[in-house]
Amino acid sequence: MKCQVIFTFDSEYAGYVAEVPELPGCVSQGKTLDEAIENIKDAITGYLHVQAKNAKPYIAKQLQVFIGKIVV
Image 1 (cartoon, one colour):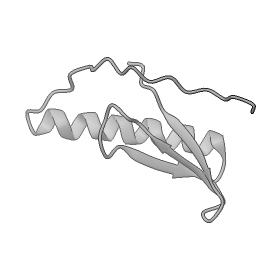
Image 2: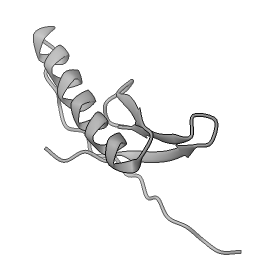
Image 3: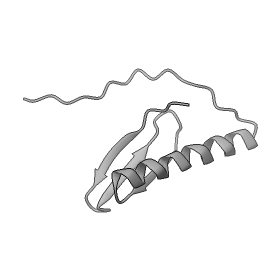
């Protein structure tokens, strides 16, 4: 399964916050980007397990999100 994950550096936490837009409330963090990646993988697995356990199977949604940078 492929999910879009948004990683944001949080200077107060001094690490990365990871959020999965198509799975509301599925958020994790890590002090390094590698740690945040592993932690969000675990969070996604747990999220999907809880959804299945509660008879709410995951239904893929097509997100029309574009993320980029511009220089002004």
